[in-house]
Amino acid sequence: AELDEILIQDVVSMSRDLRVVYGENLRAAMARIMRCIFSYGLEDNKVALLKSISADIDLVKHYLELGQRLKGVKFAFEHRVTLAVDLGRLTGGLLKAEGRRT
Image (cartoon, rainbow, N blue to C red; front, side, top):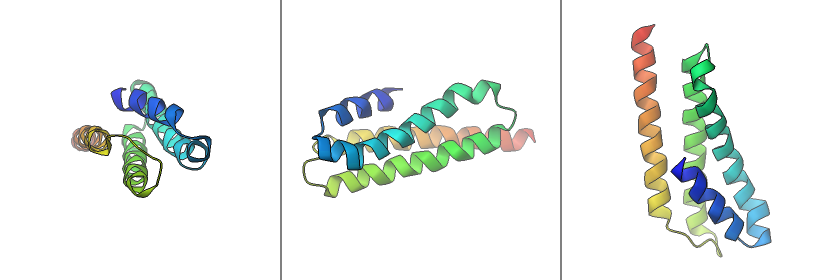
């Protein structure tokens, strides 16, 4: 949830052009992650859901790396990437745990 909040603040502070072309894609990927996190407890196929979360985490990391090369995007990329990597590790741990259950 910390990464989600930070990215919302980042996108809001971007220029309109960057927000539309770059920020909205970043936010859409993060929104899918958050939706999946909230639906995890009710999900019957947890492995598929975790794989979906993992793919979107990779997409967020990709957008963060891309942002470093874009002019006008100014935020602490290292902190955001660290949060995304930590979220990926947590997801990977849950995937391993689910794999042992089946």
